[in-house]
Length: 340
Image (tube, rainbow, N blue to C red):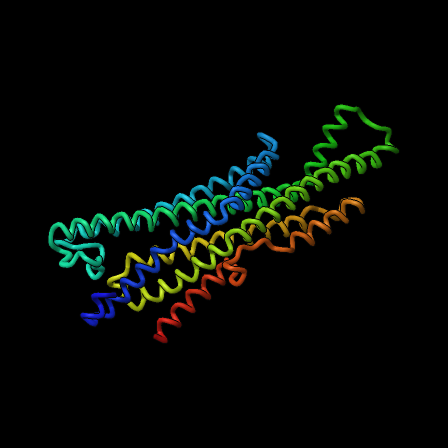
């Protein structure tokens, strides 16, 4: 900005401003997590405790692991995209003829003329260090958030399948029980079948309620811990994206995917949690509850009412992370750009 006031090159000032704002995302997230370190540790410990409740080699655990493989790919793709963006950004000057920095308009104070030795080498090394911090922090912090919210998503999807198969599991349990104990008299057969099946369903529903309640508490704690960081991130990204458009895409085309990807992935993971909750809600109604006894029907009704309280993540409690929110943010950025 010091040199822009001399040259009146306000486009360069806007580009430098957008770079400066975007580079603060990771630093702000790091300080925010450091400030709430104990809360983050508690959340991770509770997720590990929840994972210890799984029965090894069970269908429930198998379904969770299946979903977590997709979550792992999701986090890995995001990490690679962000890190690759920084790598391309700092190596771009090496393939362009002449001496160039990643941003020739960005002149470090005290290193002018910047294209002469040793100023050029110092400026380039400082830029590389800055870019490493800029991409490394948000890529790892967001990947961590993808994993823990993805685990809740995996639990909800696994619970949904358990609810859909609960009646079939009860009938299989009854057949195995009958084979072990032998046949009952005809007059007692129907009564015993209903009793055994509904007892099995009763205890299975208790497990569903327990796991569902744990996940409700976990996602609530994640939301309360990260909502402030999300609010700061979204504010910075909206300002940065607006400045990127004002600076011209021909000069800021590498910065745009860096900022846009972070907005998109936050809304994506929020939407995946919402979708998993909706799938669970539908599976509760599709559990063949009409065949249960009155006690189990009442329990299913309670589960259904609880399932209708959708788990959500938000930015500061104001913006729910979802696809509609992403579209609204992009629309507001474009409206601000056209106004300016």
